[in-house]
Image 1: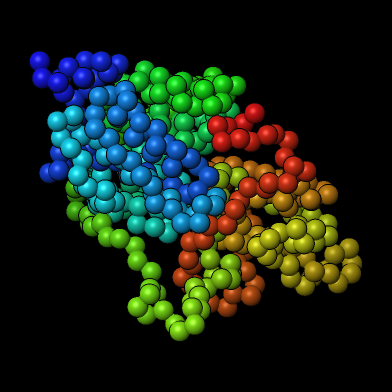
Image 2: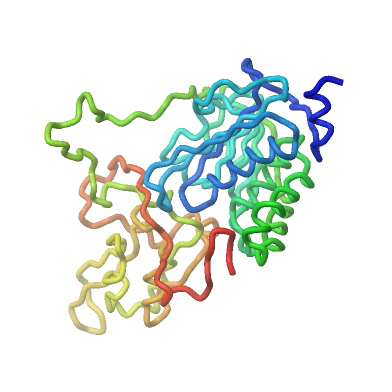
Amino acid sequence: MDPVSENKRHIAYPICLPKVNENGCYEMRLESIGGLGANLCGKLLGELGAAYLGLNSASFSSYGSEKRGSPVKSYVRWSEPEQEILHNSPVERPHLLSIFHQALSKTLPVTAGVGEDCVLVVNTAAYPEEIREELCLYAGTICCVNALELALQSKSRVNMVMLGAIAKASGFIPLEAVKSLVEDTLGKKYPALLENNLAGLEQGYNCVQSRTFQPDGRYEQVPYREIRSKWGYKNAPLGGANPHIGSTVSNDLSPSREGYIPLFLPEKCIHCGLCDTTCPDMVFQFLPGEYRGKPSMLNRGLDYHHCKGCLRCVDVCPTEALVAGKEFEHPDKQWFVRNKDLIVQDIDFEPAGADPWITGESYLDEKRVDGGLM
């Protein structure tokens, strides 16, 4: 027996890749925002291939300022032991594409490079038919899993649920191998959270809904291209001025929300303005009116373009006129009022990555660590 085959015998879960590209690699791309754990998920998949499945493996991530809400991409390549991985460029034509945040499809070309043989794993409460319409997907297999809901139920993390869903959607990754990986890595670092993480992993594996779509002429295939800034070292303004718009008025913060939004109950509102005072992004729209027979500025609603879901307003509201709600349960927001200072209604919003989590302990009733909830 040759050394490669002999070595593979000692791997706990040896597999053969079902398909590879012209470079002999099975490739995965994870599209996410900072804070959902896609970077760690990519690292775990890389280790899974090399240490548990008997494959050559490479993984790396691309992200900006390392803060919650900013776009993150993670790339994973697997090849058979006799096939070396000789390149480290971004994954352009993935065999498996995982979208950790559904709102990314509104601002980024997350399906670029997807072909007929690609499997998409999407964190969503919607059905595959609905996701195809939203993504304008050319073709491929869509696997939907409500990772946020399952993570809340199991008190684990979104990335654990997505890891289980990726294993199921791939069609060849053994669940037991992923469990062993989680036990050996996260289990040692966060032993108190191991049971929760394994529960989230299993729920993600068991709760996938999938459907395959063939090309039908409705949508065109989106080619992959690297996103490049309009300004670079060759054409940047003299003096090092930053030409990017800094005002959140022109930025869409919705991709940075991690599941929750404030819901407005106008019948309980006393128009005290505490929500507007505590809001970091001027979400609330107050206009002149009359309250209890006197002229007053009245709260007319929220501009959800600028809401990043921090829920400070929910904490500060004295009458519970603002309550926390799961965004996927409210696709049509009744009190969505455009910012009164925006004259142009069809403004081209830019994705922004503001931190949606409140970090002050006075706002939290739970302790958060990298491995999940304590």
